[in-house]
Length: 280
Image (cartoon, one colour):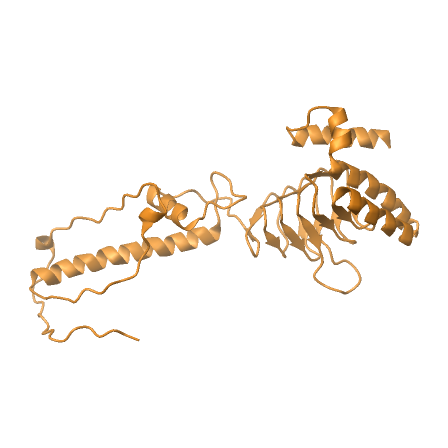
């Protein structure tokens, strides 16, 4: 028993730079206290002392702010940092060297009996406020970003973020400066992402924004050609995003294309007499 306690204390020093000394960890880390009391409650549960096990779990929740069902199976060197608000369900299985932060829920999505809570394999890290729901498996080395809601299995070494949770592409790379500014504009520097990988949803929306900008540039070129031909087109007051309200610096350049280089032979000039009507 004392060897396991010593192992638990050592794991705190490995994962929390705020830990100063052994006495500090023993007295001021409620996450550890919750784990130690859970071990006793789990033994009572295994020996069919259900009421006593649940009562001990309830008292532990009052004292630590952590609710661990006595039926949950927890491996070695498990660490709950900050601890408050953590909930771990009855059929949850947690492997060795896992880390949870405050506000994490390992919950179920069904009232059916049997396995209904998540399984965390070794070396899984769950960020603050994340919800892992259902009888899913987060494979070895998974990382879950803060406030994510995960309802599907995750492969080994993956990073899951967002609501609903989706897996970051480990092969993606940051784009050019303009795209990074667009991401800053719409807030895509998401939690849980690495330097070299970012949210696939961010990639899709960034591509849409790049396409929209290219279409605007193409329309500007067409307007220049029509203007040189003496065709006046009514300008509409198009809505848009004032990027200067969001970005510290923006430098979007529209290509300077000489209209004399545009081939305009055999182009018939339409007779435009009526203004463009507003579409309801």
